[in-house]
Length: 145
Image (cartoon, rainbow, N blue to C red; front, side, top):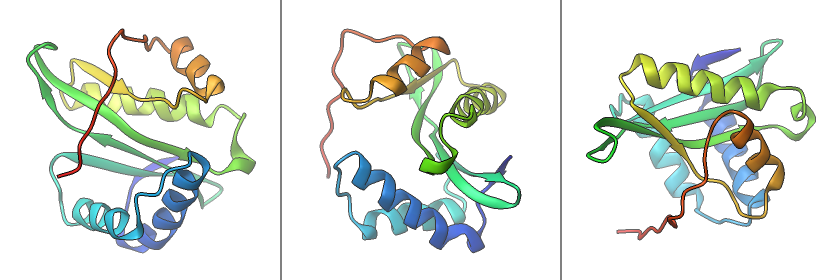
């Protein structure tokens, strides 16, 4: 069901990422998506990207960014993106993907896995809570450089 992304998957994953960003009302732009996926395919050590397959068709993707945190006491990984095509949702695939992300992160030495969720997505929040993720009283902030 999960395998590391390959060069032949690049165009499919880029199209899925565009769909994902449109759903959430974000517009990060093709250049950023292509640059990031190209870096991962070229061996970027700080990210893992897997495609999600069902019956040999790519139905989604999962990206984990590898990091480090003093607060955590070591490696602290971030589930950067999880996307499943609409027709395959509500079938337990998101749950399996999150479990896989946690399992792979643990194998890579992570002490903690972090993710973000759109405030307007109660279904995703419920899934994350059910799998043991907790809300924190902090707000995620970012700045593009």
